[in-house]
Length: 259
Image (tube, rainbow, N blue to C red; front, side, top):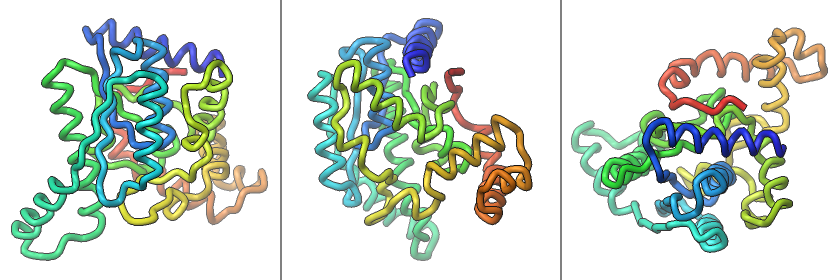
């Protein structure tokens, strides 16, 4: 984990230096991915150069708000809280007039991520900060992300790390000096784009998903070979088909750091 963290922080620092950025901005959601990204950026650039925005909606839990505030306070990050629910409500009304129909749930969910992306890109343009995308390799592989929403950014620092690795990385970083509240490490992952949403409502458990992705993407095993390793054949086939169907999203994502 030490080597991964070193490469991660060096990668952020070098990318910023090469592209003329001193500061970074990101959405701090109260989830693990944005938390780890924020702390890696802090270790790379200094807390004074990290700008974190918590953009909450009616679907944002009180726990997420508490965690985001705690991370910013513990580490002295620049921090803003923004209620984006009025913006969402106004845009939904406008879109329903344009569509002349009620909006589908997927439109409503993705709209939240895209309004966040809009605000983050405005902050980037206004103040000259590099926007960091916080997606991990598991989500990227499954297309569990919103194009032009949470995929916005000039760099995706943790995009080469599976979700399972990020849990371990967070624990390791805390052993070096606590930067993350335990709540963010132990909570169930959620995009919070709808009420009581959990990642595992859509995806297999990350321990299973990540192992199958590792066998398929990193060891180049076929579905049959993965099943022969003891993994459920139906789940394996579903993951591979979903990975293949989401190539159009991966083609449009920001660069990652090779770890």
